[in-house]
Length: 270
Image (tube, rainbow, N blue to C red; front, side, top):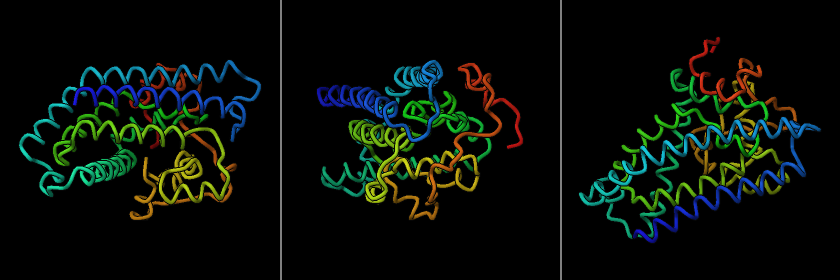
């Protein structure tokens, strides 16, 4: 089991790094939006700012929560507690159920971050990026990561999740989240096919629109069908017309690392 855990951890890290590099190169060669046209310095600053948040959050998660999640998983499975254990599923169905239930939770947690004002104060750090690209997938306020991690502990117990199943879900999630945040375009026919199953760039660009009716849609993170089931699916027929970001946070000070950490405590109209 420890060997499997180590392999999955290494795979998760490798997938994240490879995905980041490949998509950064693709964005540079064929960007969907010309955010950094003729400005390599701005691109580099943007990368460092978002990466800084990602590194801090990864460190906090590793040191504070991974051990707690492991304890929660061991307790649930030792005591046959949780939905998947109560159903007495075979191993293959347990894994599928774990991924689906975790993604269901991720969908509703995302909805909560938009509809509950307290959580939105932290989540808007992610949405305030006016130059959304693959690095935006790492741009979350530490407060949001802590809240999410605390709730996740209870979800692990409720589902009866094996810790390695959580790692499998995280690997799938990383791949898709980096993909749909990337500043790239996917041919319409391919995007239409992919979004039957997963969230695509065309879907997620709508979610990062400054228009609130678009921002408050397309909450899915891995599987796209939750938005169809919950009637929150939305598309913009002209994605090039989408204006990315949040109106209240365009200043240079807001976009600095210090500004991003202080953003939840800044008073705005929303």
